[in-house]
Amino acid sequence: MRFDILTLFPEFFESPLRTSLLGKAQERGVLQFRLVDVREYAPGKHRVTDDAPYGGGPGMVMKVEPIVAALEAVEATEPRPYKILLSPQGEVLTSRLARKLAEFPALALVAGRYEGVDERVREFVDTELSVGDYVLSGGEVAALVVVDAVSRFVPGVVGCADSVADESFARGLLEYPQYTRPPEFRGLRVPEVLLSGDHGAIARWRREQALRRTAERRPDLLEQAELDEEDRAFLARLRHG
Image (cartoon, rainbow, N blue to C red; front, top):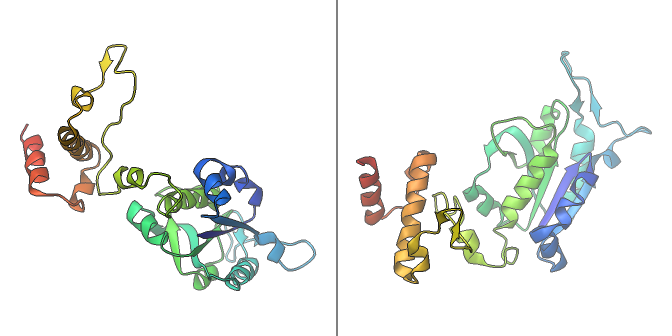
């Protein structure tokens, strides 16, 4: 899978994209990253990429011409990317959406800056995407979030596919608690069931812990989670003490 990241600060990505799973996936040829410097597509001697907003107001706005020129350049290559504008006004990224985006052979991520981008840019992308209900200094951090979340669903990026299937949100629930050695630390013991070797009991304990944690911390997720009768009975016991 290829990611084309359109940004004013390509150097922002150099270390994160070379590190850990992303770096190893690049070495194996599973992922490809192209950093596209929007400044290189700005007309004129000074490569100006921003200007004052029409109608007045604080800050500067990224100009439409260089962004669209950069988008058209990446579109001219195969496979053609699905184009995403990173914006607090877009659809909020979820695990389900990240999995869907991982099905595209290429994504182009437009990282805005300053007070935002010229509204006309939206006519040249396929969708807008937000990483949460807050404002960042620029779209670069958001682009890294999207890259990391989506990449985990690309086959061959994560060594053990089961680890992706069991993590938080993958099945509509928060993940169950995890433990490793030592079995006791400062009076805090690992639950006995995890030391029992009874795989059926362990699986059920993990499921119940995921249900309990979700009910306590993110009850809204239960509305869309895939629950069986045993799950519903356990949640009913939780509600009634």
